[in-house]
Length: 495
Image (cartoon, rainbow, N blue to C red; front, side, top):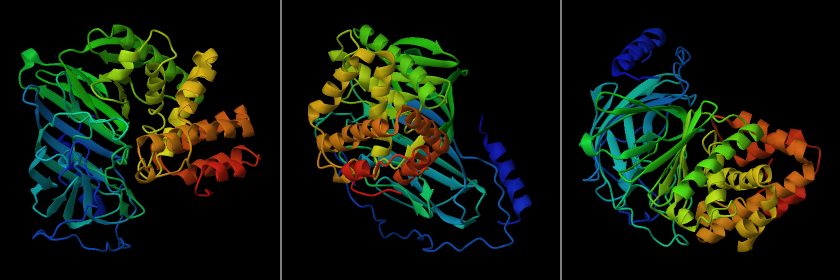
């Protein structure tokens, strides 16, 4: 759906008529607790009064809508953005402030806010600290009503220098000698769950962000169209006169990668276009990643539920790991280097893993910082489901090489902050999680197990779920006692 500011103003007029109411990071940001600094900016009220009985909520939008107009200077590594956010208050309470994530601000000098307005009026009642932007509202935003936030800013992209992958997550946001990556690059309103704005501290590994589903329309223009790179992005693309428009609905994020070196292979699965973007000399790996994604979309669509978007981009990344975004994921250059022409390799099982995140992250979201296993254990186990469906002769190899080679230990349900390093964290949340799901499947049987996964997908689609939701949805699907498995693999007892 195209979002226009004239439509926004008309919408707000209708709403008023109907309702009558009006850190200085290094390459891996050092984790800190972000407290708002003392400034002359008026602080938001500490308590939000309950809505009055006379207010009538007017639900207009199912989710937030983001419109971004981005001008990219590929060679200068800069981006100029005009962004508009239509945010519906679906919290059930009045709001007197909005909390917006500005992740690029974790890199010194990368984010420069040049203007911000609320419902068309410029405002100075905001404060910035690290990745957090607090916007104090001049009046309460009633439950069910919509507010329009406009922001203008520039990005100066950092060089994405890579550190030891055993110590920290890969650097993605920024540029390398052959690639420009925009990930978590735009301000977005963070989820508000039970009255709390969810914006966790960054960490050395794992993901710290939690996302509501939203609709995106992104217009991308390059300063020199004659030398414009090839672009991989979330969503469907439509060529405009001097820009390209990308649209995607009910998505957790919008990611973009650009390179003048990309080669592209595409195929169609039903009405979904799946495309693989890779660098020269890696044609075999690019084709293999595409084939695995195609097979995974088919297998997971049958086992879990339908793939939600009309496109899926697989991008060779100039860094050390895979990473998922909406209708888009990266695979490390190292996986392409190691590809041996068979299906028994990192490129294949990580491609299946990242494709699975289009179900366990994109559709069924969770708190990736405090309960990372909720999506990562399922994505890891989905690799097993891929192999048993497409390469059953390799299932035993997968367990040995992918999982048990690392002798995984620890409780599955650790937060990223308690992982004691990338490998111990991955062993627990991913690999012990896969072992738990395998034993659960053996205990309750295939029929109950896959019926549960479909139900879990259906109930969680478009939402942010918790570990309690996982076990709550599981319970009606079996009469088997699995309490011993919960005690063995989890430090908390879930209901």
